[in-house]
Image (cartoon, rainbow, N blue to C red):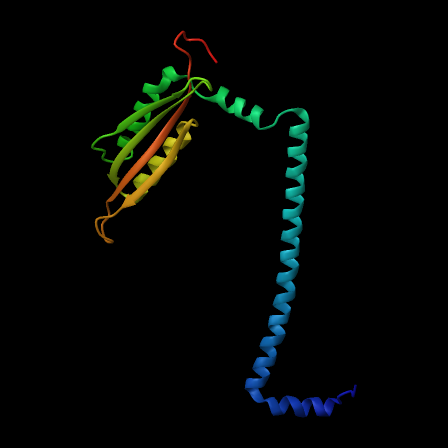
Length: 186
């Protein structure tokens, strides 16, 4: 391979003129950025790999100690409130909607019980009207107050794109531990 002399390199650079020099500078900058990004991506990849390995070790330890999914399910069930708190929890949910300034014309409730699992679920359909910030605040406050509450679905509608009011259909589930007819715990 023939070595280029300094004089011939200067002559080649002059021949490129400013658009060519600008393109050459852009290529050099892109190469430097590529090198920096590649290194950062490698660091992030290594961190994610270490996190995945740590989680896999924890999962293996849980399985070895017998604290598998069944134990997690039992822990969750034991943390659920008793069924006799259902009416108060429902009243708290409705009151939070009112405090958030949301208008609700009606709510519908449907109770389902799985006696063999010792669980019950009160499904609450709640149409509301209000502002977007009010709705977000209500959902956040409700989920924070009651850890055994889940938001199953949310449908949003606006009368027009410029309307400040939102019509929302919220479907909640209040989960609880169910006791048999005799009051015994499962």
